[in-house]
Image (cartoon, rainbow, N blue to C red; front, side, top):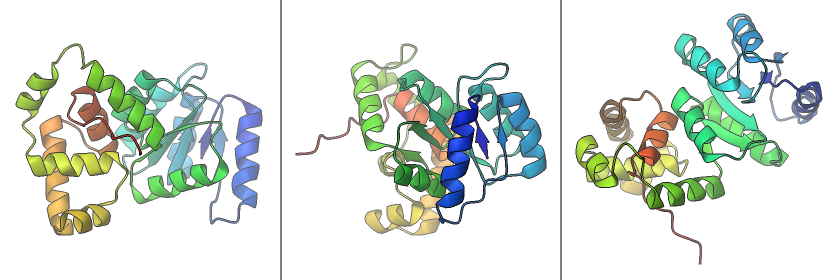
Length: 220
């Protein structure tokens, strides 16, 4: 399902998805957050592409209401605003991806598939910029050292959280760390409890805000 206040955007995405031949079915679209919530109750889509700034109920409020009522529905933010604070607020609200409207078709399709699987999708350049900013300027209400002490993630939990931030799936995390899938799940549950969240995206958002994720290394 597509939620955007611009008709041309909704029609463009509909055409893109319908002619893609990628197994996508567009169930419907809405022009604002309130209409989206009403339509989602009827259609129950697997994935919602959500704009942020719309008249009436904006995207952030819509995400919050959708996640509270239908936690199984995945939401990918699709916006023109390349703003770090908006991305973090969207992830905290429950979105599992953040894309700009000038993204290419293949990246959009990859994000939709990742969302349908329950995975987090953030473009690497966006994540690198966010981590650089939060490393240089920790959350104003909590120093990095204090955040680390209060949260008390174990070394292994930090490794799992960092892998989630890179967009790795549980199977990939298990293989790279040489642990079982159930162990990955146990670590994620512990991370959620310690950070007070209920999703991978929210865990990454809180991890970024509290300085728990390291600055990404630049490619050489």
